[in-house]
Image (cartoon, rainbow, N blue to C red; front, top):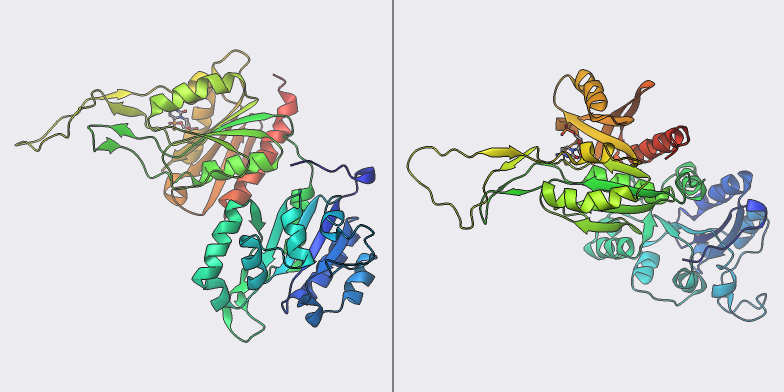
Length: 402
Ligand code: C5P
């Protein structure tokens, strides 16, 4: 996407307000954004004006508010282009079920939907609707479609709703939306850096239908790849088999075995600034892979296992190699093993977690071990933890020029 330069570095947002009771909270959001020095232009749907008058947003943003595709204030009658081109970000809060449905289907039947379709900058939505509307299969379908169109969702949260019901569908609080927006608009500490991430399990075949693998879901590695991309890096993700979609803007290379992962990683690593090994790589593989499905026999069976290459170890040993970050999933004596592993692998940073708490879960907590000691990243959704990890890595980088 083409990036529009902003005058004097001031960030510019287009805030879309669609029809929902939560529109009153959008007024507070404008106040927070303006207070932070952000230039806010408000576009409302017709339905939104039934909840809060444009004059409120005009007063808070200090700018005219637009609702009409044919607004005569835009000289060339191209409001959908004019109003979005100088923006760094479009945020729609609240985003109603109807607005999300129109957007997911590429409809452009009012100013806000047309402008979203014509935009060049990222788009974030803060959904707000009744719990049944949110949980309806049609809305959930639209949510998936929007995610595949690289539209970011903020919330919704669960709790009491204006209609008197309780459940998921509440718009995030203005302060939470403001925090997410600030993060999006914030500095890009890894701009210009090439980041290589491994994720997911490996699969080591025994025969044509059986193999050795582990419970890694890939969620942590994918979150790390997304956080690195958000931080401005050019990210390649070498992934074992997972059920996950590659994060937006990330190049994914699919592999199955540890040896395939090694083959994919080594040439890429030579050309990377940072290597983050999140994959749960099998330490051993069967010495022999049978070309046919093994038959059941009488008595026990013995299988010889041979060690797999240590991918992280090899990358860490490269001359002029990337800044290496390892992950350690220990089930006991975390601290002692982690320190030892970091030294043994000769890497500047190791992120340790207790495997039984992290595998397949949505949240994780990490302890980072570096030359300075330990830093704890408390339990939070994996993407939140991943962003903190990337901040930590970015802060360590200048001290270790390649
Ligand atoms: O020694 P251990 O397997 O616990 O080390 C874990 C770290 O090393 C992880 O970052 C993992 O991705 C990486 N690793 C690897 N190749 C292996 C085994 C582990 O890159 N064969």
